[in-house]
Amino acid sequence: MALSQKTKEVLLGPLNANNPILVQILGICSALAVTVQLKPALVMGIAVTIIVAMSNVVISLIRNTIPMRIRIIIQLVVVAALVTIVNEILKAFAYDVSVQLSVYTGLIITNCILMGRLEAFAMSNNAWDSLLDGLGNGLGYAIILVIVAFIRELLGSGSLLGFQVIPQWCYDHGYVNNGMMMMPAMALILVGCIIWVHRSVNKEDKK
Amino acid sequence: MAKFDTNSNVYTIIYATVIVVIVALLLAVVSSALKPKQQANIQLDTRKQILSSLNLDLKGQNVDAMYEQMIRIDTLGFTTDKAGNEVPQIVYVATLKDGATKYIVPMHGAGLWGAIWGYIALNEDKSTIFGTYFNHASETPGLGGEITTKEFQHRFIDKHVVAEGALKMIEIVKGDATDEQVAAISGATITSKGVEAMINTTLDSYKDFFVNAQTENKVEDEVAQSSEVAEEVEEVESSENK
Image (cartoon, rainbow over all chains, first blue to last red; front, side):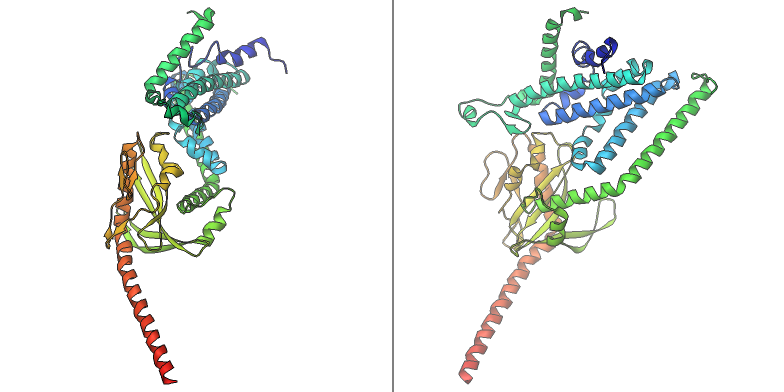
């Protein structure tokens, strides 16, 4: 199935030119919290992608029935209900994953990317485009999370996905893990650096 | 379908009510439909945790079969919990493949950010630690979260909890630890102290079980010794009578 120009824009835009973290500056809080290690960052990225896509579709389907005055509340109810149902299903069929994810449930529900996309896109577009937008934004968010977590885990604990990567002889020669990498402030600095690189590369983004 | 004015007050209130009812129904249905499966998962997970404290490798094993074969639950009596309810105080009695008996005590405590819990397995002498298992709800990954690693849990093996007939506190210390102390996780002092408090408080509440065991063991030893002596005397007498 060939993707139309608009569809391509909707799906691929958030991966780079319209990245939720780098350009829309959404979802920063969880980008700081879960990127201490690579594995939670991956879990969070995948979870957010799925939830954003699903809630985008649901809101898009009922968008013409929602009263304007309570639309934010309705969006929140839909997201919270979806996250809870997904969590219940995971608890029944993939218990280990649900235990890991239960820590992030609150972080996903309050993630600004969800509310941002629901309000900015799903309320005024059809279900198919909303699905793509959700997937695109979720993946764009996941990519940045993985990059930040990669750097933080590698430099902060010398490991990746839990496996020790920096060999012992480095430590013996005086190399020390960068403790600052464990702190959220460092994640913010890293995101800032990535934005800097991103803006230099995407010069037409100058706004 | 008639076109509703989606911004009128009446519509807004009715809509909100309908959404709430639908969501509540949906959540209730999903939750109760999945409850049996979830309970089974939770029970399996708890059994895995208990067996973990016995230093067993559970990969690819039928955990339920292992558990049913090895573990028996003994109720030691009743205590009142924080809410004032009477709860049974239990100990898991494990029989290993080589016939050895281990006693596993469940523990609950507080870490830095949330609950921590675990199981501690003691040898038949009820005074030496055979193995431990710890888990947590929301400690920091890489710091307090390290209590779930085998490396940390193995630090407790062969430490004593009873010395000279009385309960001895487990000490978790920063930096180097002596033979009877346990090294804390660097960067996770509060969580480590939480583990220490959890173990000591739990063992204290099981004091009767452990300390009486020591006197029981002594009495049993003495009885065994005296019956051995009695047997020898009988043998000598019977051989004399021949």
